[in-house]
Length: 335
Ligand SMILES: Cc1cc2nc3c(=O)[nH]c(=O)nc-3n(C[C@H](O)[C@H](O)[C@H](O)COP(=O)(O)O)c2cc1C
Image 1 (cartoon, protein in one colour):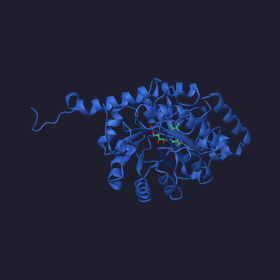
Image 2 (image 1 turned 30 degrees about the horizontal axis):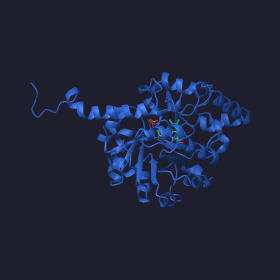
Image 3 (image 1 turned 90 degrees about the horizontal axis):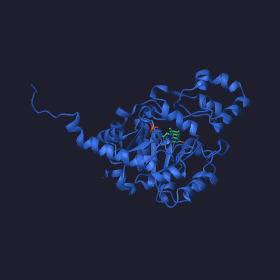
């Protein structure tokens, strides 16, 4: 069973399911697996900053290799790309199907991406930014709600998606933030989206990069356990522009330092080293595990292909069977 939408037709894929380019988590193996299953996998090059242990030009090339012959795309954090624009050139040499840009002005990069024939996917958090990227050439606009794991802003998915869909039509919209199963996919389509961009649910898969302790944490925590904070960026020495914060699983480190960024900065490089060591060692009391409110719907670690197929099958079921199950369209008052 397939769900054909403007996004599947534009990208030439079977299912309207895009893997979010989760920095350091969405590697080539995961992206390739999602594409092989009929969605589109996006490699997460994030900051393209080798000092974080991933994201260098060599890392990007290696992850494209791991995707095998599958058609995949790649995503960058736009304000970070401004500091290392060469990373985009390195990625474009691999002929990605799509390039996703988030968090910053796309103007310096839009034409360069589109000239290669790659689809330009732009993730936004506000209606104003949606109009801006549509005017600057976005082929797909991702409307990201605050429920999302990782960086984002304040608007919620439910009202943002239809507003963006109306504002940027006929540019197709993908919904992101809190979508972790077939019901979420079906709901997004009802809101006027032509597909979904899913992160947190794909974190807990066999193919995702990252420490097994973090995957286990994702499986056992829920949406109530997340918070939006700057503390993990401060710990890593990253200065994100306003209004962005990162949604992550609350841990002892966040409990100690949340909203005390100046104090944290004053701790200096020793604390930064301790933080990176925890990240490498999978010490989840200190390391950051970015994840969204969709955590409540995640309790296992399947192969990515099974997830894509299950999500689509359940969405089809939700759309077709809802009238039998829990929705009744009554044309007269029921006695
Ligand atoms: C671990 C993690 C890392 C992320 N890294 C990035 C990133 O590097 N660039 C980006 O554009 N979005 C990133 N995101 C946000 C996703 O693009 C997407 O908006 C989000 O995952 C969707 O919400 P969901 O997590 O509820 O599915 C990240 C999300 C997670 C969970």
